[in-house]
Image 1: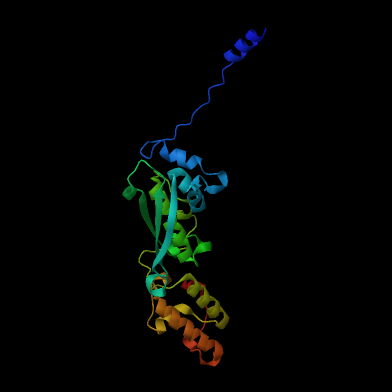
Image 2: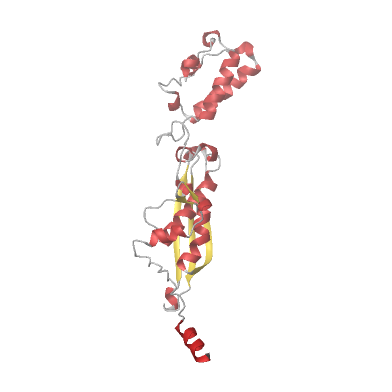
Amino acid sequence: MMSKLKKDVAEVKPEAQETVKIPSHNDLEWTDYVLSLLSEDEKIKGNPTTDGLRRIFEIALKCTVVGSDTDVIQSPSPENEKRATVTHKLTYILNDSSLAPELLMRSTTGAADVYWGNCDKIYRNHPVAVAETRAEGRALRRALKLRKVVAAEELTEEAEDHPDANSVNKVTNNQINFIDVIAQRLNINISKLLKQQSMEVKNVYDLAHQDAVDIIRLLSKYQQSVGEIPEDIIGYNNEWK
């Protein structure tokens, strides 16, 4: 009886466990594998977030990050169309004993520039922060060797109106809106005022930034002394925009 029991136990074989093969960086399946490490809340419309890529970075590459540094190359100003340019450098060490020590240290850099024309409206007042996130996302993507993948923060759904590559030093929407409000309040014809000041333009968006500043300064003066407004510019007309 005992020998039969031992025989039965010996014939019981453990079920074969399926082994998951992790593709190499050069395999076509590599990108899909890396993206599979992300949770659903680390994707926006299928695109990985920078936070998500940062979390899985060491897992996917089997490495240890030793440096994650940002450098602001260009700060926003009226002269550069409020554009921010940022670079981000990732430094990491591969946990691979098969490689020579001098081959274990790696670094990758990503760069991004952001201004009102390539940034969602709700973030346009924070170009440095947006550029920093985009630069880090690009560094992560480059190091991870992802194919045809863009980080969610690099996408723009609703940029500022009238983005124009030639709009450096041009009037901003805030200036236009401010001028329009004051002009209505004072019953001033802006088209006539611009012509009077030798600032006449076919399209208001061609008005120079400094000219807009001067017009706002003049309107502010008229607001304090309504009696000084010349009669030939009286009569607000909303078709000036």
